[in-house]
Length: 255
Image 1 (cartoon, rainbow, N blue to C red):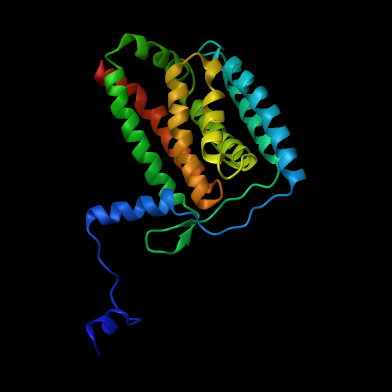
Image 2 (image 1 turned 30 degrees about the vertical axis):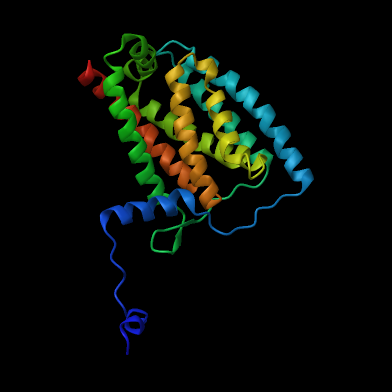
C-alpha cells in the first residue's frame, strides 16, 4: 500500500495543523464559509418583513433613546429597557420565520455555532477592554461611557444584568433575524449592521454607536454563515455581559 493510500484509510489519525492554520480554519468556519440552506421567501413575505422591520426600527430607536435618558437609579429604567426589548421581540416575531441556524466547524462537521459565538464574543470583548484602557485617559470619551455605567453603579447589578440578557437576545432576534432576512443577499450583512448602529443614534453616546457597529458586523457575519441567530446571540451575550462586569474596573485601572 502506498503512502497516499495509507493516509486515505478510514482509521487514519486526523491531520495535525499548526497554531496559525488552526486559527485560520476557525475563522473560515465561523465567519467565512456559509452552510447550505434554503430560506427563500415569496415576494409577499419579503414585503411584509420589510414593512414590519421599518416600523419596528423607528419605534425601537425612539424607545431606546427615551430609556437611556432616564436618570441612573430610577426604577423606570429597567421597565423602559425591557419595553425596548419587547419592541424588538414583537417586531422579529411578526416579521416572519426565524431560524437558529447551523454552522460549520473547523473539523468539517456542523453545529449551532454556540461555541464559536462564545469565542468570537470573548475576542471582541478583549479588544474593547483594551480600547477602554486607552479611553480612560481621554475625558471627552470617558465621560459619556461613565454616564452609561451610572445605571449599574446607582442601581441593581442583578437587574441590569437581566435587562442586558433580555435586551441582547431581543436585539439579535430582530437585527440578525428579521432585519438581516429583509435585505437581499447582496446587502444583508451591511444593511443589518447599519440599521443596528443607527438604532443607537438617539442615545447621545458616539462610542455606543461605534460598539453597535462592531458587534453588529461580527454577528451579521455569523448570521450569514450559519443562517440563524443562535451563534450571534451567544456572541452578543458574551460581549455585553463581559462589558457590564469588566468595563468599570478597566476604566478605573486606566484612569
